Image (tube, rainbow, N blue to C red):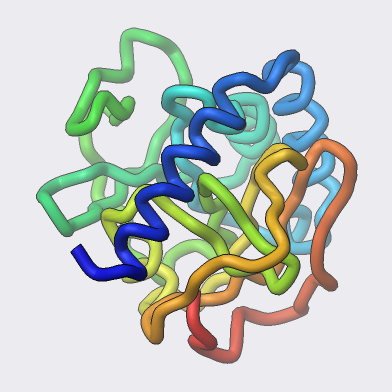
Length: 200
């Protein structure tokens, strides 16, 4: 393991513990979802991509429900292989429509393939983010690959305790457009998708 990989692994463990220990995550998640719904990028979107929560992540189900109720198309990620992320459109959050997939993530019982580029807004999970809006994920590289190919506005959702001053970066890393926390929004929203990579 390289020094950078070891540094990231230690940071992931520390940030996971910090997030796990945070009280009132349901209330904080609801505040985050409400703020996302006020974003011009969300209001203008006819289709969005949003993860289904696992472990102590921000619970995005209120946001997904609001998007569906507003008539927006919603795609969710499906882990299809060790380094491969696929995507499926959904119609409902009803329990009977979902099964556990790889890594314990929820995925639709019936896959309706969605292709990157078919949505204009991607809601991104993370373990940590820094002042420059770079994120630390779980290490699978799924979202790095997705954001590198999809012309979409990328909005991270996180609890305020997940913010750090600076994260280690690699050439393939991509900067988020915004990060929405329960206490406010980090970053100035862009009217168009990111201009490109800058090291996430």
